Image 1 (cartoon, rainbow, N blue to C red):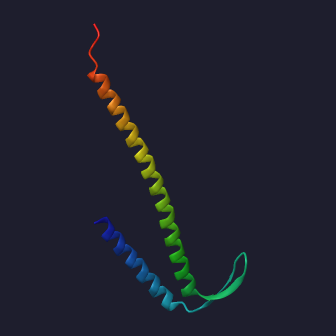
Image 2 (cartoon, rainbow, N blue to C red; image 1 turned 90 degrees about the horizontal axis):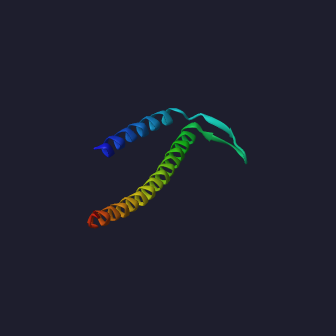
Length: 95
């Protein structure tokens, strides 16, 4: 359900971007570190939107991977401690 809602919101944002991009045919002069160029505003908005989306997903993927690895290590530690606890409970009591 969350995925469907997320995709609907993404589709709405994409449609709004297309609508705004179709209305903006102005040329924009971009002077960045290595070069400079004149681009249509709609193309520039589309490129930056896609680049931001990809960078966001890459960061999210790395964070998720790190959390899963951390979770896996913690699960192994809990399993090891659980086995040790069961072994200690199996020992006879000393009087």
